[in-house]
Image: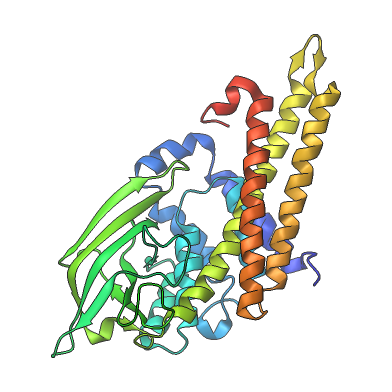
Length: 346
């Protein structure tokens, strides 16, 4: 598999980098974060750049790209610590809708998402899931007139604070960890019986905890086949994992080069820190971990069309390796900066 960028992908990377460097300056972060890490004008700028449809097929209303294009974009988002819910909406929610195929609700919602007009968010994660996509304890029961009632809790729903609708997973049959029996429902944030608590995370993104207490939804709000949503969720999470890994690559890369520039400028004992061999070795180790992590993303991308078990193994390996490498690279960057390494600017 050739991972050299095409001309179009290079243009995507360059344009995304220019826009994000202009829009995501440090001094612009505080008011944005205070406003829930979302600004409608900036969001529309991202939509006008075609970001939300970059990895979607043309028949779905996108621009005919692939998951590779979205990993390029997410890496640039990582470099600038983008706090808007690009990943939650343009990857997780969008790929869930794509995987539902010809479902009329999904087909209607996707173009609005791509245009930046709709803000759907997938509400699937639960506190006891332990990373299992198939774990769903939230229940959906149907009465005699066809109304569904949803009850349960959803945890750490990224972007939930700005969502204009939730794609809620609920169990219509089976046990909590069965792959069969999971269904998807569209729920509005102001639905009766839905309570929402918004929380700012350590990386200045926002998430929501949802509690559903008999929330009523009609048959028209059911997405896809009843009891058959697992494949769509697995497809969306596969895209979500590899793009989050790519975002982490962007974070590590920026931390590495900020540290390099600091060592070339900061003086100790009359010489720059970059001349100390011990620090050169540390920088080399950081670079090695970065490149190994990038290779793990490439490996995961190469298994994107493999059988599910093969793909799961590649994604799990990437998560483990990049989690460890990210901690090492960013930890070393803080240490080499000394005191200013723990300030907001860095």
